[in-house]
Figure 1 (tube, one colour):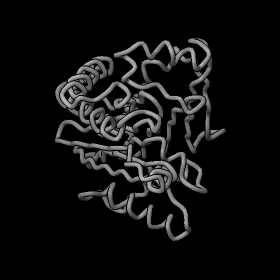
Figure 2: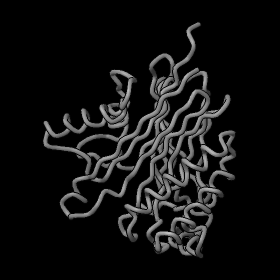
Figure 3: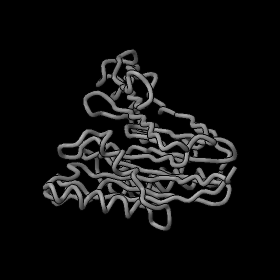
Figure 4: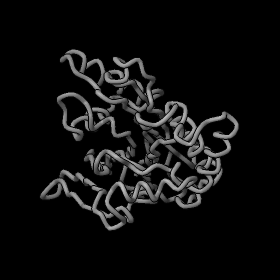
Length: 274
């Protein structure tokens, strides 16, 4: 089994028109025994979250690389500590680190996606079928890892109506099932520490993660956006960047495109021939 990985991100039309920086960021890494792909989306109402998204992504990837046989809670803990070290070294404010964290990591025989905040994880199996898993929060108010440092969890819980409020939705799209999309409603307490999704490593050829920008592309359903972005023609070199650029060109031909910033990172799993 061999892993390759790539990533891409692009500014959305709202930020471009408003003279704002791209607040999405993506990273990826692959070796013979390990693969990781990370995206982070900075909160538009936060501080310098374009910087914060980069800090969160690098903290997460470093933590995954140093502890490849990962436990998600340990990875989250070490990532948060790195966030704080970077915040201190760069003189950042707490609201500069208001950014989501979505990653997929493969180590040994385990493959797992994790979403802290909102975003999408998706995989293409060995038969070419695409499965998608989307996490979204009510009121467009996702949880952020930076809340660990302050008392912001209390304000976040109150804003959503309490720990028992069903403010978290999980959309699971599996085209071979009837119905093809399942929507689960979960409580604030359920989603406060993030959502983990285990994958059968032997089943998949690609596993990717996306910022919630895929849900805000002009005139397109989020499932169609993910499908287009995972329609790889080849897996050599910068395969995600090529696919993202082709998607953006196709959007422009119809006078459309991402409204919000968009980010994607993907691991390609090359299985041994039977």
